[in-house]
Every structure is written in structure tokens, then in C-alpha cells.
Image (cartoon, rainbow, N blue to C red; front, side, top):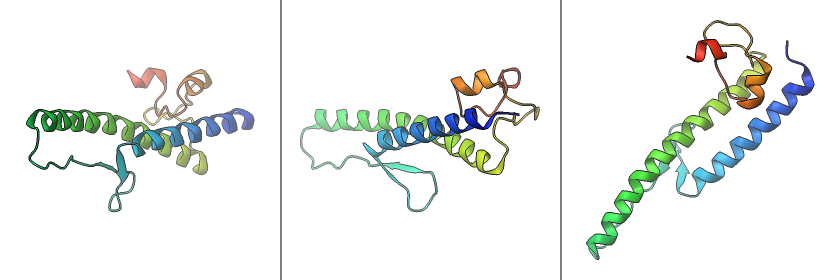
Length: 119
């Protein structure tokens, strides 16, 4: 069983990381009003001007989609971990149902699997 002090430290760490990820996503995407936890990256608008600049914008848009997807996945893991804390299921491996080591949780508080099951 995890001690209360460690659990509180991990909760703070998760909340800080959640805010950081939301700031990063907010720099180039907006929260979806339709799907909870989804962020939408705006496609660039073109005026028929410089084709080279427009091609660069499309390439950057593609890069932002990839980055946004990665950030959204991490944000989802953090939100799920915070929800597990509320329900008293935090720190339990989703696969084998055994406790996740405190060392693993300290290094990666949003871990859903123990080291053995992660492989």
C-alpha cells in the first residue's frame, strides 16, 4: 500500500504535468467541444499566394498533428491516473492487478502497468 505522502507528491506531479501539456497543446490546438480530451489542430488557410510558403505550412501542420497526437496520449494517461487516484485504484497494474513499484511511479507517475507487464 502506498503511503499518503508519496501519493500526494505524485498527484501534484501529475497535475503539474497535465497543466504543462495543456499549455503546449494550447499553443497550436484548441480543445474539441464535441469530444472530451480531444484537441484540434487548425489547418492553415491559404490565399493562393506563394506556393512554397504554403507547402511549408502544410508540412508544419503535419508535424503539429503528430506532436499533438503524442501530447494528447500522454495527457490522457495523466487524466486516467488522476481518476484512478480518486477511485482508490492508483498504482495497480492494469494487467496483473499487482502493485506498481514506487520507484516506477516516481519516475513515471502515469504508469498503468508494472515493469514486468509493460514488456
